[in-house]
Image (cartoon, rainbow, N blue to C red; front, top):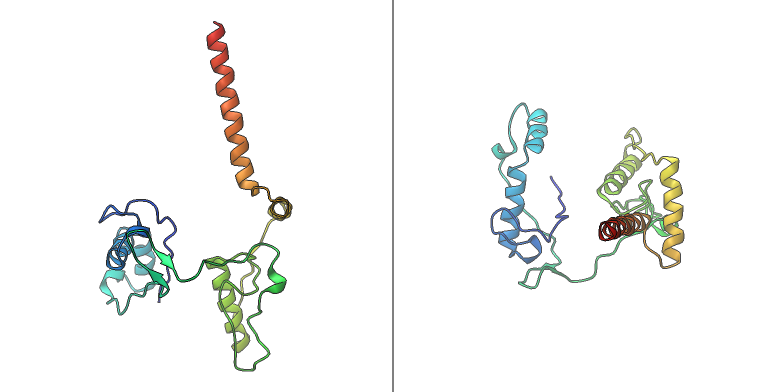
Length: 192
C-alpha cells in the first residue's frame, strides 16, 4: 500500500506537458506512474526490501485517486475546500483512542507531536492508534529544536496579527535588501 501527494501540481508533467491540476484523471495517473518510474532512489529502496525485486515486478492491483476530486480543463475541483490544522490547535484535535472501546482514529488531523497536518503526523498517528491495540509498538516522537519552537511562537504572533509567516517575512526582507543593494549599485554607476 502506497500513498502519495502531488505537491507541485502547477508545473508541466513529463508525458502530456500539462500541469497535474489540468490533466484528466487518466493523464494524472499516467503522469504519477511516470514520476515513480523515473525515481531511482525509490526503486533502490524497494529492491533492498524485496530481495532485489524492482517495484515494476509487482502487479499494480488498484490505483485510487482522491474520490472527491472532479477533473476538468479548469483544474481539479474538490467537493469541499481542503482543511488543515495549524500550530497550537492540538487541544481541539481528537486523540487516537476514543471513549468508544472499539473505535480508534488515525490520520494527520489527530493529535500528534508533529503539530501540523503532514505525512509525518499521519504516520505518527497510525503508530499511536496501533499502540493502543499493541502496546509494544514504538512511537517515534518528532524532536523539535528550541530555535524552531521560538520561530513557531513568533509565527503564531504574526498570524494572530494578520502578518506573514516568518519564512515569508524573511523572503520578503531578503528581496527588499536585494532591491536596495541593486538600486545603490545603479546610483553609484550613474554618478560615475
